[in-house]
Image (cartoon, rainbow, N blue to C red):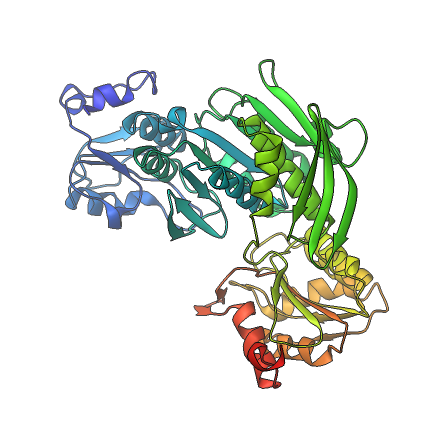
Length: 496
């Protein structure tokens, strides 16, 4: 596509030198290592690197032009196009270059602090169970028309989203569901996308290192429901029990479909039974009542499943088809994922990494009526420090024994992070221990457990690595727990 045609209608006010307008742009790229002949290269200014320093490399690899908010570096040779907002421009240009694949798909975006991953997994399960070819993007992995790939970000950049949607469309797909993070909304990654449905799960303290205040964090989430550079969603599925959900604004033309446990919600979960084998409940909806049975555990999943049910209805599924699809969603990796090696106590790995998520996860464990709940957790480095003592207090108040350890310390000293969390732990009299080495900490938590207990390994969930100051190492809570349990003599094969 000629550069003039590519920017026409999406980037008003951009003036090109006459010879630049005729440039043929075959694709776009923002990683100079991936640049190829015919690419338009976006040189972003990031927190850790300035993309301008890689622009010449992109040109040497065959890029035909560079787009940036800043001036060209000294000595740069080639077309350099200044933009007021480069990320917005990339979103608009990639959408046009790929022929707006979002308009060919029923796109659902799920946002909120907790529950995004499970809700997206459940919704995609419903759609595939109904025979749809789908795309799913989230924290754990990306799934495109049956092809699975590792996740890079919770929400990819706009260019990557368009490529994924284009692949789903070309495979005959009809639906695309993904987690929409507050970072993605603030950084214009979903700018211009047409959403069939948008889901709000909840809002609790997180990412204040990026947003600064809860109000700014909420404002980022709000953008999904009032049009993030595009039309507002046709249907907004909103948690009515959440105080921030009740504050969420929608625009004329968007159907507001609320859900929750309280009376007044359009989708109300009632007759709830929570047990070791999952959850059973009834959803009272405008068309009647639908019984839901799922192997997912805990009251928090009643919310997640009801949110997915609402999105399913918004996309045209019948209540019966939605319920059948939810029952088929057997497990979500790293979300209260049970590790069973025949031991006489339950071990669950969960991604909970906020105080609210810890409360919810421990509540799931408490609902199983164990003798004791033993919680292991850590806090991430280079992230919101304010939530660390809150996490420590939540874990200690609700557990019978706590093991405080390291999570992904990144550039910070693990002991400094642990000391921040211990401020909250010490507000209680709950027995606890500190072990910075996560593998040794898991061993201590498992050694503490007895018959009938529940051990929660919280914080890393599905992750298969640990980010240290100078390197990233392979580390999977699930694999480590299995290895330790087997070293204690437990075995699924011999003890079942």
